[in-house]
Length: 522
Image (cartoon, rainbow, N blue to C red; front, side, top):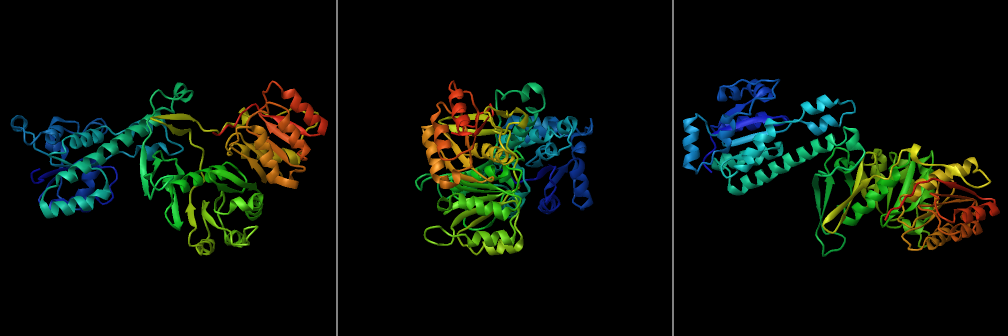
């Protein structure tokens, strides 16, 4: 690559661009620019030439056409080592452009606004910018392409030292440029897929998912596996805005567990505490008082809570932090060991108190809305589905027993129905006072899940309710429940033998609700 003599600068994100352009000008680089960028540079007393003067063609159509010109793209795409390219450039008066500095219209930020119109979104689809970026990235053997303010310092330092960019730097910049345009295009495709009834009613034939590496991990699930954490770049992922306020870096398994904890806590409108172990809730409780919710969630399974992850869907204050620090292992009496605490915020006193635990990771995340789709990898492919977050109007509530649920049972049944969807199938939860007392998960046999949940609930199963993520194929699961004192059941219904289960509940004076909706979580 020859010495850089001319640069074209046209950026949407103008952070640091004046200082960068001034540094280029001081190195003797001629600067071309357009629109707002050119005005900014002129205001900052940086020597700049308008692209319209360079091309001899004015900007037009409200700025839609300004850099789409042969003199711009010829200057970028000409191969310096190709005599015919250079001859044609001279013949047509095309000056070579050695450095392109471009970042794109803020499309993702625009469509994230709640009041954005379709017309506004379309106007924020950049055309000239991606075209210049791709041209420069393609011809990176001769042209440098800068797409982020974070690159300004390194590029300017290398140019100050050598007057040109190394091959390794140009390749790295080109890779970043194509990542930039790929992310941009995926954002546009994703937005358009939500804008008409046909697209909304089905999964698209092609799905553009852009992932950004947030951090490398020491290893994956096991030490012999490499691992990294990527988040979906869509402006909606809470992980994009996650802040780690204290503790060691997160591991692969930490992220899995943390996602399960945050999904569970944020699924409830009421103040809620969720305790997760191996990506499965072992404690869940809701209460108007978050401290009470924490204490009940912890007591649901205090043994499993040891070494677990806790998520709160409300800010943590110092009183709650004290309650957490005072919690003890029920057998050893040791202070409760937690690997992660997650919440939307912390008071300064709470953060200081919790930070006394050296190994505790403290995370701050915005309360999440369920994503539109969820993804799961299989070998060489991806499974995609809608989030299991149905509109309440789609969830049935059919009392099929002689006895209607009491007001307290109704609250517990609704709570249990939310709990069960966060437990691995075959899933059973036993709940009372909006507290999960026991759960059975991942059993090939649903009856064994019932037995596990009731055994964990113990004597507290009396007067509790029981939720199943799918129907009871036989009456035995309900029969075991009523034998332990369960007074209410909620499940989808739909078994050929539903009448047998209803009869068992009626004989015991229990109540049963069918929802007509399954909550499998494999």
